[in-house]
Length: 275
Image 1 (tube, rainbow, N blue to C red):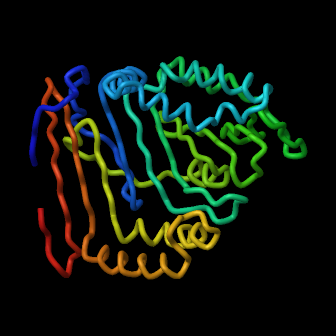
Image 2 (image 1 turned 60 degrees about the vertical axis):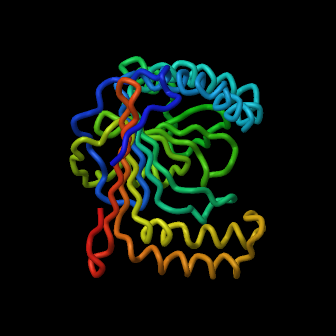
């Protein structure tokens, strides 16, 4: 555990949460609870970074790829949500979906929106019967299904979807994944003193879940400098090393200009525990 003062003097956060719920499973988990609106945290950090975060996001050009109809459907919602996402988030990743036209990571991004944020989400979709095909750019739900889908013409395998659970709004790119998560409840534990930002890695589980997806990327030439064979050799070496580590936890807190970082490494049971 260490602490130092750095170039974040313009950042003002609330008190770190005394405890937060975290899912028991998963190789990757990142949570943040800042005590102030996420939009305010973004603006402050972006300002300290000279606007580079906003420039990078704009450089992705995602909105530029939308049609006029899609823009009219999504942009007002995004603007409404931007200031009403709550004070924290949770991001987990569970490998790569290999069934889509473009294999993409399977992730679950969760917020606790304010009342206005929940209302903005609930007022958006139209309800479609099973025999009606969705139109690109028109958010919809299905009868008996409370998942909101945002079709972008990318195919059934990739469709931004939002569902509500335990007071959170969950966002995923994969509708099938959203349906699975919305119909089940992941076991959770209470984490004490998580700080403002908490990262948990389970290296072996993480590598295993991304193994096939990374090999596919390499075989399609999407990972410069790697073939499927060279990447497989690297992943095997990494997997062997990762099996020595059970879990890595990092907690960051920022209070009155002081950044505190705590790191914990759990070695695999046969090796013992190091902190």
